[in-house]
Image 1 (cartoon, rainbow, N blue to C red):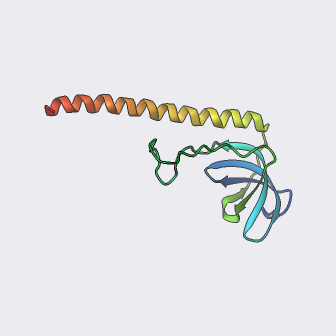
Image 2: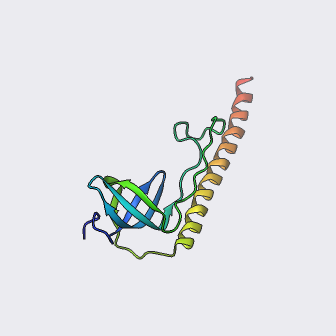
Image 3: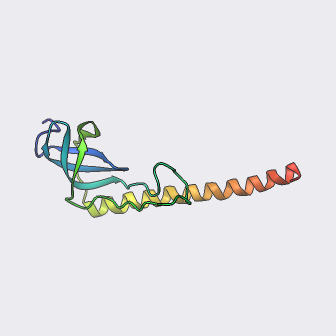
Length: 125
């Protein structure tokens, strides 16, 4: 079954998240996909200024809702053959992974600041 055919199960990249969904229709360039599961939670903040907490507009991005229909470019979809886990379970896992990633980055930044404070001392500044 081609990813363009209604009823095809696909993995898609939508905005900054990844999802499993069902193809509803295609216009030849894009697919309309009904979201069934979340694989990667969307990234927060300004994508044009990544990791900048002081940007004028810090975007809050929520995952696409269960059965929400989204248009994606044809090239952002691929057939998916695995099991489709329950949406809530995948949302919980994806959000947890994103929060864990942010916590790791926070701890990394704190360690960098500690190291740079030591380097400053070594420089005599």
